[in-house]
Image (cartoon, rainbow, N blue to C red; front, side, top):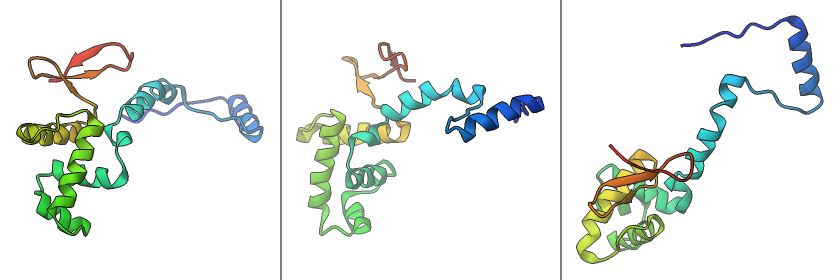
Length: 140
């Protein structure tokens, strides 16, 4: 719902003077959300990846096989994608052994689609860090 903020002319003059002096003005309703948005941006898993790795994980998350990923990215073959997959798993702290590759691929896709750095507890349930920076919460 869009809400209009009404101001007196003197309030606008103060804002305009501040802007002319190089200060910035942010609507208080928006300013309250900045710390949460900044935290989410800093916790975004894409910040951990190179641009090529981000392209690979995006395609992986949408169900593409390595052969198709290689074709769409103009790579020689699926082996290059496999190497990039390993880099993605390492950056996200996912297991790299051959037996766990399908699990790692699924978890990497989940991390990308949720845009959260997820970790898994001993029972295999995903958890993530809350904006307070201390609390781990089980993901639904």
